[in-house]
Image (tube, rainbow, N blue to C red; front, side, top):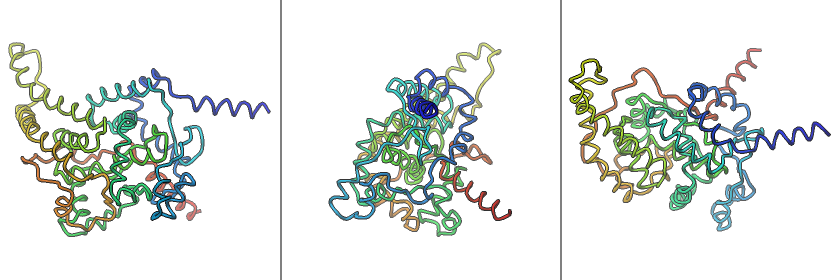
Length: 379
């Protein structure tokens, strides 16, 4: 009897929202960044017991959608989702509850920390989730506006190194979506596994909306012909804010613009400080010229990106997995993607080092399963 009471008390404590101050301190700590991959690895054994390619229905209504997708009843039932259990349970997904004050503090702190280090993928994932509730109805409306978007809500596919055959895509002819995507990944020295789990989303449907939004981000870069530089990221965020109305996109667009503006002002500031030789220079003349050029390009690209977001068809509804062999220029034309008004310099940095922060647990679980199977076979 006592053990049962103690177990219930432990579950109740685990379901309580994270205190706002603790959330802020944890988020600001360097250990949070250093241990993010380890934390995701530890969750692998109790997350995503389902297949890496398929998503089981979480409610009876979702099962009806899977089996009767052409009926009116299925279309009505598809929007119903079940809440995800708390992080203390051993269910297939994890949910971290937060109070409104906690979400506000997480939004503010992650925004400020991202200004200092935009490469923090874990912070970007948190900011995306805690700031997304006002925009989720619009995002869901975009999905439901096209047949492909409705199929995505039903099938819930994922894009990562376990679900995509990169070798096959590398052998496609140039000009095909799959081949150009692989070439873009190589050119920018990134991989398809840089998305942390959406643990702050309360339902399976909301979790997938955020997952698909983040997994599709690199494809927006590809279609808009934007590298992963500060300029390219800022332009893509202006497009996302215009089309998808995600708060994180607007915050990132403003933050990126401020970074470009501040970098372009450094030469003027250094000129004022030239009389003090004890103050060292923090950038080279070439970097100063690049920053000033980025500011000029940004002024021309922002109106183009905003207009494109309004006029283009919703890119988040594209089933990338089924369109690898399509001509990329034809795909751009079919969705109303026009060329940028100016050429954007390609990405030059971070050679030999890939950005891998917060791998999805589906990828980690698949690799853990393979390792376990190999160990069992060896035994």
